[in-house]
Length: 190
Image 1: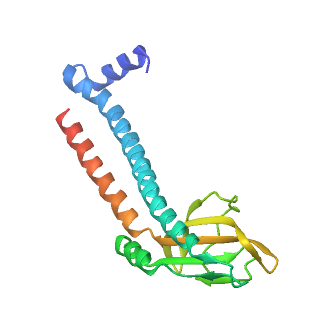
Image 2 (image 1 turned 180 degrees about the horizontal axis):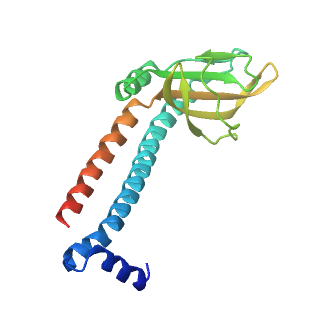
Image 3 (image 1 turned 90 degrees about the horizontal axis):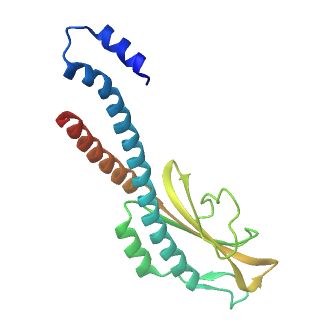
């Protein structure tokens, strides 16, 4: 803002107004804008942190499933690690879903209609994404790796694990509300 604009604003504000009132009229909109940007950044950080935590737990479940995938019988078999899934469901706020399938999708175990990744994952690199599953928001982890033995024409297997995002939404909401209260108190003190 140029000095001439500030002088014009000051003159329009009134010659009888105190310097404190003039400064408040100039600084308050800027402070509110900065507080708004701060809350937006806080929300983005909270979602990023929550996603990182979700992704680590999803990757652990994917690895546990991967250790139990077998092609020894000539087909695709998964021995479910029930203890791990029980523990995983205790930490999750909703249902946990999984899908193990050959890359061609002809052999599937688990929840066959679990949403596929938005882009094909690279071999050996997990992918994490948000999706809708039966009207519920879920965080999904997907991992593709080569099969030890081909199953039919399929050379690769995809492992997916998903859980509800309800707890993530609650966490980020509480985090942003606390930041908004902190920023409002700071503005009031200033």
